[in-house]
Structure formats: C-alpha cells, structure tokens
Length: 139
Image (cartoon, rainbow, N blue to C red; front, side, top):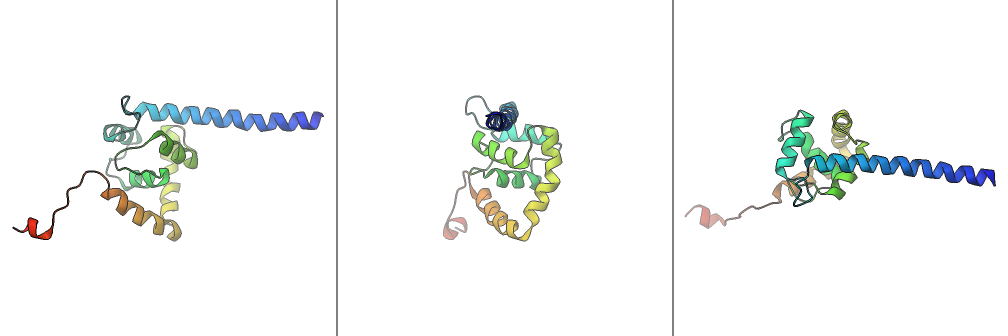
C-alpha cells in the first residue's frame, strides 16, 4: 500500500509543477495580449520583441511563430503560445531569450528546414493582401 501511495504522490508533483509552468506561461501571454481580442496582436508582438531585445523583423520571431504553429501572421493565440512556450521550456522572457539559439539550431536542421521554409512562405502570405491580375497592374 505504501508503494502505491508513494507512486500517486510522485504523479501529482509533476502535475503541480506543470500547472505552475502553464500558469507562468499564461501570465506571460497576458502581459502582451490585447484585452479585447485575447490574442497577442502586432502591437503586443512589438512589445514582446522590445523585451526580447530583438527587432520585430528578426527571423527568430518567424521561427518562434513556426514553433508555436501560428496560423495568422502578426497574431499569437493562447493555445499557440502555450504550444511554443512548453516546447521551448520557456515561461519567462529570460528563458525565451536563452531558447533562441536552440530554436535556430532546430530550424536549420535539414529535416526541420524543409518544414520551416514552406511554413514561412505560407505564413507571410496570410493577412490582408490584395491580388491584382497582370493586366490590371500594367494598364
């Protein structure tokens, strides 16, 4: 019986630790999220970049979006944020800064780059773009 009780306690400890980590990840998210949309919008991303001490045009921000699985350029949802931050083991700005070199290495591995490149292309096409026909442009 004591072994069974010990194993149950061991199972609960990581659960508490994980829930605290998620809590810190969520807190960090809401530092940058727009209150009305509950998303990190372009303004929030600029603030995040400022705190990370990187320009918002830095390719590592695109890599971060890839790691999160973001669908819309310039916006991070809470679920996307959680996915990326848990994968990077980052629940603070300092940990996220420290995760960048590993993220760059991950993306530049051949197998991952083959996933990243088309993602980056599609990601950069999302948003409000107007397409014109060739004839319209040159009339």
